[in-house]
Amino acid sequence: MNKQRIAHLNSTACYLKKDNKVLMIKFSKKWGQVYAPPGGKFERGESPLDCILREYYEETGLTLINPKLQGISYWHDNYEGIIFIFVAEKFEGQIKESEEGKLEWIEIENLERINQFEQNEKFTPYLFKNAVFEGKFNLDDKCKVQEYVIRDI
Image (cartoon, rainbow, N blue to C red; front, side):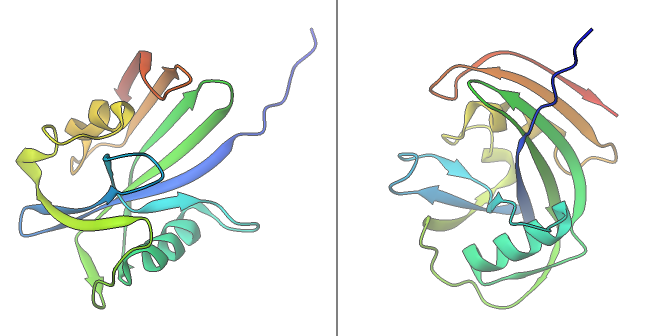
């Protein structure tokens, strides 16, 4: 039996909570009018924690304090990737304008009502819980979820 090794596209995202709100980016160009938490792709030599600390600072001007791994979301379309999903409640610094889009504090109860990537919508109920989750998503070429499973790990 011949095994095929896969090189995944790895990225991170962090949901920063303050006063029952979460800081999100409303993309203006890259993805259309969709919301997502700040984060991004790994650079050479980075761990998931290294990546989210750097990306979050680059996109928001904020330094996360003790972000906690909340979930791992595996996806595949023409490629395969893993998103390491963090949550945090403490930070330092002042918000700066993001080149990615507009930063907005969204009420937690409204997260499921805003226009997010479908994959993110599916795992939103698993955020800020005392369990780590794993999501497995089969996507089409427009990032629409074809099938998925989410479970606590």
